[in-house]
Length: 219
Image (cartoon, rainbow, N blue to C red):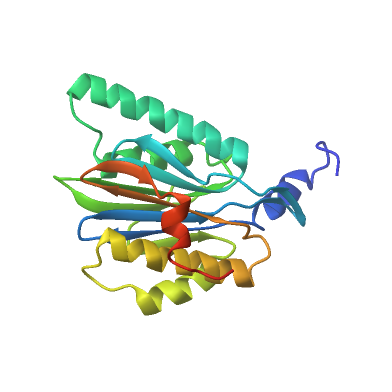
């Protein structure tokens, strides 16, 4: 379809909706983020090795679903602002403040929106574990666990049954992996592999292949 066609924006929005599953869980000692690695363009698999969890700061991460270019621009903007806050205030930006800033950016661009759905998650000693769901219009909500993307209905089914209060990050990452694996099995836009990130008192770290393989998820 030609970009000057009046139906082009609607066409792009429909193509963007058809891929990705991400999730985040709050724990007693941190947060866990997980996502698949498939990037799709409609029915075409554009890339099988995409990192959909991005580091904003050592205490803060962002999962991305939607348009790649829009998400990359927001990641760069959030990294810049987090660094400026740390330099000016000699402390990391609060998780809630980062989520509100991202929400304001999305709201101010609602007439020419970023086609994204994001999860902002982080852990500080003062705030504890926090996760925020952000849509393309800037709406912001928080829950104990959140999933986004086309496979999220399937992931939510697993999360609802397995999540409980007081999980440690070492327990929660296994739940997150099984939730993404369930989405991979049932959603064509989700697939290939799973990335997992833990943010706790030791900072931001991505789980190595060996640790993920030991969980034994099937997809």
